Amino acid sequence: MSSDKKFAIEAKLQGKVVFRGIIEKTPLSLGRSKSCDIPLEKLDFLSRQHISFEKEGDQLIFKDLDSANGVFVNGKKVKKAPISEALNLEIGGLQIKFREIQVNSPRPGFQSKEKTITEISIHGSFQDSLELQQHNEQLASDKFEDQISIEFIGVPDETDSGRS
Image (tube, rainbow, N blue to C red):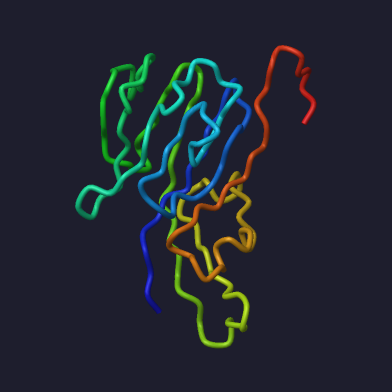
C-alpha cells in the first residue's frame, strides 16, 4: 500500500473555524478573491491573492504573494516557510494551523467503477477537531492528486451572536 504525506489545514478567526481541508494539490492559493483555491471573501484584511502553498523539492511551503498585510510566524513577518505541525501562521486575526496526515492508497475491494474510497489516518490531537470521517468523495475521485477537499464553515461577522 503506497502512502503520501499530506497536510490538513485549519483556519480560525476569533476562535471560530472558517476553513478546514486537506492540501492535496499545489500550487494552491488563499485570499479574498473568488479565483483563489481557498476564497475567504469576507476577510477584508486578506489581499486578493494573499498566500500560496507550493512544493519546493519534496517539501510543502507557503509563500506570501506580496500581500499588503503580510504573514507572521511567531510574531515575525516572513515571506515563506516550510509547512509543518509546528508552524502557526497569522494573517491579521486569522490563525492557520497544520497537521500531517497519512493518506493511504485503497486496498483491493475498496474500488468500484465510479469511485475509490481512500483511507485517511490522522496523526496528533487534531483528529477530533478535523472530523474527517470518510472525508467527502473528492478524496475518492479519479482525479485524487488534482483536487483539494474543502469544508467551509462560515466567517463570523459583527452580527453573529454565536449562532452556527
